[in-house]
Image (tube, rainbow, N blue to C red):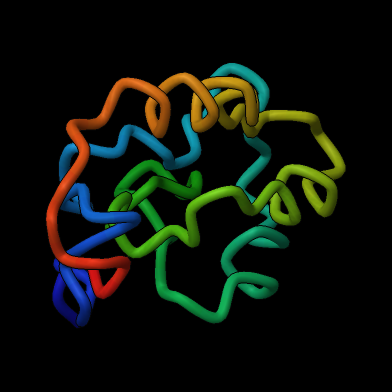
Length: 100
């Protein structure tokens, strides 16, 4: 599975420029893989130490907070949704007529 999303753009911004993906605190992660079992986008994988790792960060659905809700250990952190509001407000206006 590729780490590059199929569309490549999010609101006219290249996906790799949108820092929306989970961060796992390895001290809290128990390796239960609840997040990996829940996420249909292949963001997570098993790590060498038996704990879950973020394997494909840019496959994460922008704005989604669902996986942190399923982590029983509270090991996942996602950016605040306000970050997206600021990112969208700071993007240059394009002339595509809303097609990007």
